[in-house]
Image (cartoon, rainbow, N blue to C red; front, side, top):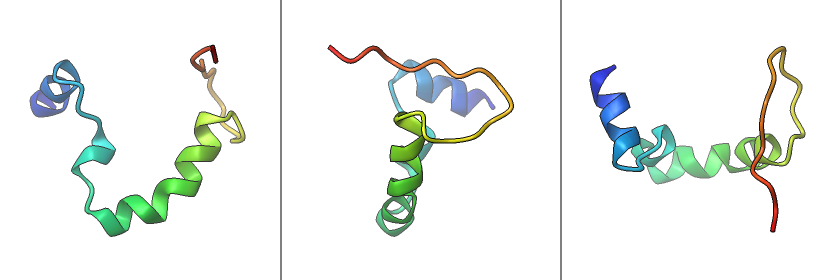
Length: 50
């Protein structure tokens, strides 16, 4: 947990620790999440597009 929080201070995300193949497999799902095309039971906030 401490490493996870420390990574945030350095701007490192969980996906930065994944190997290239796993990252590639997740790209589509992550893109859908970033565009709000996902169904969750909690509130999500998205960055404003400039």
